[in-house]
Amino acid sequence: MKDWERRHNEAKETVGMAPYGTPQYWRNAAIVLSTHAGSGMRPETRAKLEALARSGDPETRRIAQQALAGHSYF
Image (tube, rainbow, N blue to C red):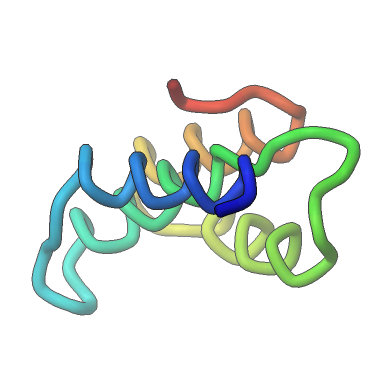
C-alpha cells in the first residue's frame, strides 16, 4: 500500500460515514481530501477541493480552502 493510500484510508476511518448529501458528508470529504494537500496534489483532487471550497457550509469551506493552501486537517 502506498503512503497516500494509507493516509487516505486512515482519514476515512477517522471521520466515519455520514449520509450522502448531508453537510457532514461533504465536511468529511473535505477532511479526507485534505490528506493529499501539498504541491503533489492531483488535478482531480484539486478540482474536488475547489468545489468544496464553494460549499454553503462554512466549516467545509474552511477545511477545503486550507487544503488548497497546502494544509492537511490532521
